[in-house]
Length: 389
Image 1 (cartoon, rainbow, N blue to C red):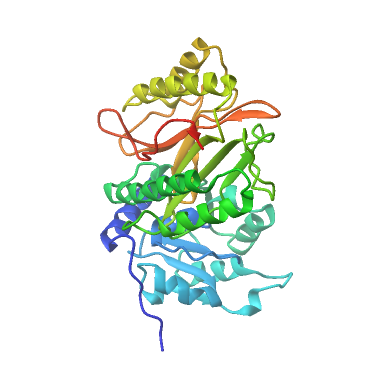
Image 2: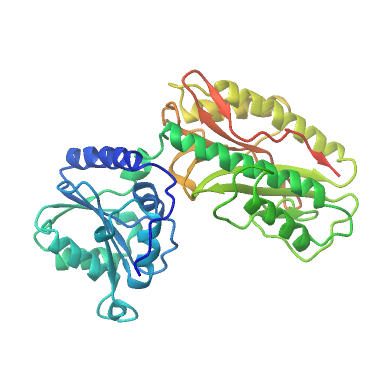
């Protein structure tokens, strides 16, 4: 029996709106067909959340309302189930394209381009997502195509969210807050880090009581004394101890949209050094949030934070945040000193104010935020405090 359509995260009209914006950009770039290989961009345009580990491509053609998704045959049922696409628009290629030195899944994508009749026109590729050999394959097999680099073209379009997307990100934020709440309940002296993470991860999947469930997961980051200066490490088998500081970064995931959050925990009273840094960071966060409004730049928000932090005797070397949406980070705007990206309503960011000062000392606090018509909305709602156990 054929697989049935599953519940869709967004209505068909929402996906067609997104495709219309992409097609408008294609016309501007004189592109008749665009091959999308970014997994996040395919999710954005189709609703697909199947993790495709084989080569694949979404062909957006100006002549067709719906795009054509080319995937490994075994992934086709999942894509039919999850996407808004007509099943005829999902092409599953056979295993003869797998594990062969002379051909691969991109050959199946190229075959589909030829069958759609767009092989001799302007062809957009996300070249930044392709290996050199893959780009050469497209050029060699499609010699009459005018290849145009469309790297990040869709990423910038999806930087401005619809109200429907914001609603989903608010659900993700509620999941993130529930996980932070659970962390405060399970972090105790004598508890193994791995066991605490298992409980926190369960909360990321269950979500808040009576609320939405997490529909995806990325491993959370957890570092405790003396590793708090190492921001991107995973948990260990060590036991939490009295006097330990614990830094956590995690996210709620809803239909692959994310809302990250970072909080610092202390088993017992925090040290004076940690308290002073926390107070300075929260004050500087307020300054950054006050600077967020349409027409301002990412640079202005970052520098509002840096100035406020330095007034309190601290510096932060790294950027203050980045654009977020599908699959965590969007590869576009940074909340950094030299990023002149103009803020627009419904842009979303992880205002990430982690500060790693010494090899054995760092501190984290962050919020997921949305630019509104007049200022800022903080999506995550956990209290901005050192969470004392």
